Length: 298
Image 1: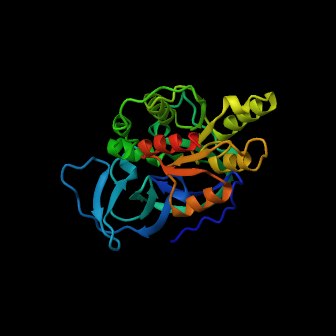
Image 2: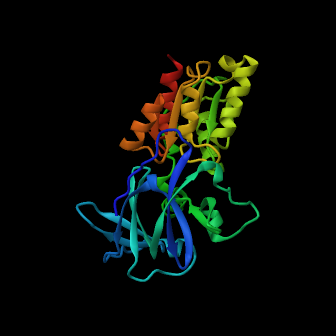
Image 3: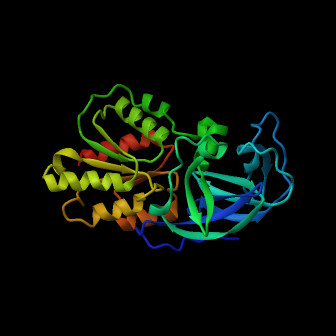
């Protein structure tokens, strides 16, 4: 099964693939999927993480297979079912699932953020919940699943140390990032790199409200010098935010950096069409600082 992103740019919509593991429905953003293939025999890897089933080669690429049932603390999967092969953070990973239901087109506004009071295994690795025909579908945080298995795939904080001692600056940088962990890591990294004035928001809508508040108060030039945005966020995604910023005569001068695990050639084209000034994949925190330096020196 090949997947194609049919969505127009900046519409604040996404396509979610619904799949089943151990009788429960889960979801993944179609933009993360490379293909879906039947289960194939795999080769176990010695001393691997319990959620790593092993490796296989569907074509010429060696792919690591992750047992989603194990990630969700529901035991081990049996041979059979399907592999959802994903591509994000410059990694190709296969996730073992029982079956696939279909694709739903939804708005980011309709995605419910998991409650802080919920303590299920799913909640710790969930980015949101959608309700389709009375059924709840939990959208899993595949980046966190992979980072929990191998922390080396996360943000390379050590790249900041390689930049050496830097002079501090109060240049205001606005960040839109829904993951509290990633938001903290990005802020800590930027502060370590000398950017001490960081305004944090949790989604595109919150960031746009801040920008328009500054615009209406006549303080935009002073209060927002650069915007860094994720793509996947509830209420308003990063592409919609970029479109709003770049299509408004009073805000389009703000440099926009899309910093997302979804950045690949296809998504870069979308970002370019919307007017993004730079686009980087999430692990590249050192490059992010260099790009910020370049855009703010113009």
